[in-house]
Amino acid sequence: MKVLIADAVDQRVEGLFKSAGIDCDYKAGIKKEQLLDIIGNYDGLVVRSSTQVTPDVIDRAGNLKIVGRAGAGVDNIDVKACSKKGILVMNTPGGNTISTAEHTCALILSVARWTPTAFHDIRLGKWERKKWTGTELDGKTLGIIGLGKIGKEVASRMQAFGMKTIGYDPFMSKESATGIGIELFTVDEIYSKADFITFHTPLNAETKYLFNEKSLQLVKKGVKIVNCARGGIVQEQAIVSGLKSGLLGGYAADVTETEPPTFQEPLFSEERAIVTPHLGASTEEAQEKVAIQIAEQMIDAFAQKDIKGAVNGLALQFAFDPDSKPYVELAENIGQILGQIENSSFRKIEFIYGGKLPSKFSEILLNAALKGIFSNKTTEPVNYINARLFAEEMGIRFSESRQTLGVKDYTNSLQVSVEYGNGKTRSVVGSVFNDTEGRLVRIDDYDMEIKFEGDFLFYENEDRPGMLAQVGAILAESQVNIGSLVLGRKKENKKALTVLTVDSGLDETILKRINQVQGVISSVYVRLN
Image (tube, rainbow, N blue to C red; front, side, top):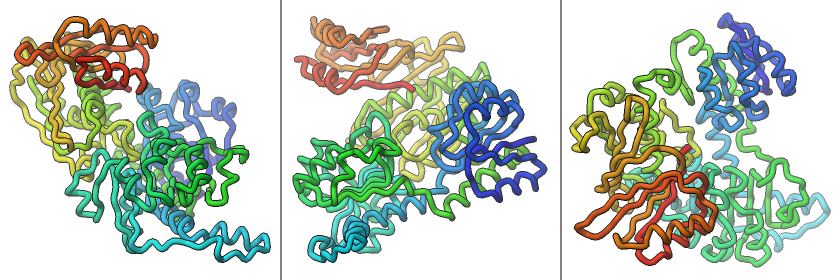
């Protein structure tokens, strides 16, 4: 066995591999061209965030068995390409948690008391006590958007300063939040109630510019914003506008929309903006911890002792199994639908297997459904390995059972039902055709049959003539091509559910137009990864 360390990590890692009888080359900072030339010689690859493990690298990696990321995020690794080639991807979730949480707290204190900016003035020979009058944290309200590991650690530390902590997380139950001293609210409610707001969410289509110009209309005057998560969650132009108008009392961030920035951005001209160069995980302890952790994980995996921190571990086990693969894909697709069809938190998830084949793969199928539900909604890496544990940590109840689902002509089928925080319960049933092709066969009480070919537009409407024509016209005007269409009807209450597969994304403007059509009750766009 031979391992390549391509990014700068604690050099004791090299010794750990060699002590386990694994050859190791330390080539931190290796260029892409050099990596392509030599990657075929290695069984393992250790990276941080600099080295990009792209499909062309994977194509050259004829012997590669494991890619280890010394850190949590795997944005720089093409996990899908690794899975297709049978390469295990591992990371070290949680290794940076304390460092990032502490840095967030440091920025909250900095923007409360202006220590960095006041010291900057001192360096310029200025002694301006009145200008940098601060704010006490005791008795103030801290809004935490995203209550994963980091968000919870921030809450714990800032509660020690006497701060009242409120928060939002789409997966955390009221009971779990209460247990750690946090009261749950919507994002807009947090904007209106909090004296300080900190973000701890992933960056995706739903969280892009989560704080924006419109948010300024909701906040308490003088609120201070902190972002140690991802650049782009907070719109920098909105921050500049808020600081100039006095709506915002200050801004502190460890991330920027463009990294590294050009330093010509308007944000850097604002006196009451404090920015650090993405230092959240930059502590000796964190770097040592994640480096040693990934080495130990890879050594155990090479020795076939244990698999920890696997991003795609069970996916590899089942990916090439012709019997289980279509059911795994079906379960994850159903989960993705239920994760997006309601904009609410989750209370309970019920998984039902209908037929012998789904029951045979029950261990992986429930995990796949949970993975689909949580995908792109949390900073925590949720995968086939840790999906159940993640649900438990968030206080979400889940159950599984085997029973006849009563869906005509579908012997082997899966049903996932979700009870949401808004009081609604939604369910989706899917089945596998010809042992290979997953299809959606029921949504709530609507029976239908539709393939997973593209993303979905679901809209419920009054069952009367002309509805489809009006919605279709909006899509046509927006240059959105319809792949397929299925209609379910409830004659007793004169309602219908239309499900369209679409070849391109639908933005909020299109959905708003559809919702304004007379007779449309609701609509939602669901993206399938």
